[in-house]
Amino acid sequence: MTWKSATALVLVIVIAALGALAFWFQKHGFSAREEPAWYEKTLARHARRIATPAGSKELKNPHPLTDKGLVEAREHWMAHCSTCHALDGSGNTTIGRNLYPKAPNMRDAETQKLSDGELFYIISNGVRFTGMPAWGDEDSPQSIWELVGYIRRLPTLSAEEKQLLEKLQRGDSGEEKAGAPKPHSHADTSGAPPHKH
Image (cartoon, rainbow, N blue to C red; front, side):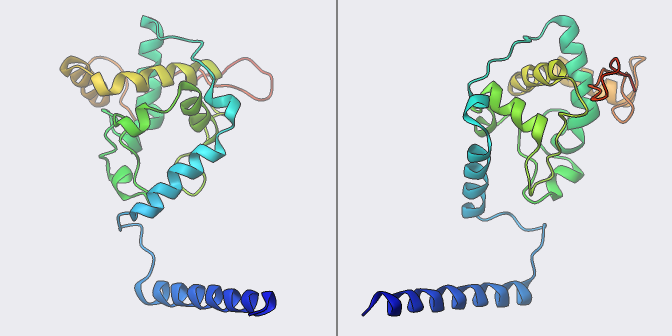
């Protein structure tokens, strides 16, 4: 068999496979209600690794959580993250359960083994073809680094911390609800001073 014949055969097989895939999708649809297959999860993990620049992976958190930073990071988490990732990081929310792929459980080893720099990059730049938005133009680098520190706390949240989050969400302790949290600073790309909202 010549290389031209072999190339033609491979091309026919690829076209047939794509045709079969298109027919399957037409017949069965492509629903976000389904659980992603193992190969989709594997591809998504590898795509995320490949898309994160090597230099970002090596970055260390320059803003360890202080008491004040913890309060702000908690408010930040409630304002931006808990809608999909839940108060406790489980991803068990109406939106988190129904995304495709589903919002990851931030407490799991798969997430926690990411470096600080990877988490910072993902929060700042988002992840294409998922529900993860890019917050880099909305939030200051310091607030994102503090959020990375807060994500590290999620697997070991105490019962008291979980109760505090629930109280804050309900507005029981004199603070705002999760939908309208106490203002926190955001980056402003115009060069003006940080604004509050």
